[in-house]
Image (cartoon, rainbow, N blue to C red; front, side):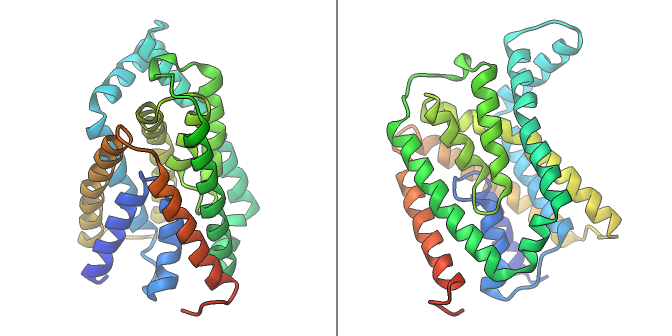
Length: 274
């Protein structure tokens, strides 16, 4: 694989996985817009592993507390951190079930096989969920912190997360939108979104790893390079977003989503040819 493709893939994965602009949407259209061959499922696995490790390193205190809380739960000792770990696990279940449904239905495979249908879906989801993000950020209260999280809002955010399986939605975007609608501040909404993303990204990575193993894919040095670059860029993207949301709204991401969606729809409907 050309070095420039590896670099672009890793940068795209690292940035779009955590900014509310959809990693799956960008990766899905990259080959259509550039003419590059598909990067393969082994590359996808390792880039997601890089993103997962970026969350673990950036939020290492939260991750350590959740791990200790989870171990206490196994000993039948309920703590605040154990309760948060339980909320994250339970909030992940809707996405798992919806993912199994989409896989069995063949919807995502059919979408990948039809470039114009894929562009249409990504274009509309970029616009629609961009508007949702704007409304949530503009009108959502700004009163709650992670310490105020309990089971009902965690499950609602988890239900929102399952829509991220539709390309173009953005996992971070839809979960941050749900948290903002429920009254969580921007930094706390982003923080919970990233922590909630750990089992989702890990699960997707394990599933893709299984598919890669069954397909006989090899993990070449190119793939390890992409994983390392994805980690670095992902860490930077997390740090950038966490710093940004303390100072301003999500409006720049909303505008980007509207522009991206409009551009993709002009291609999908034949107004622009690439």
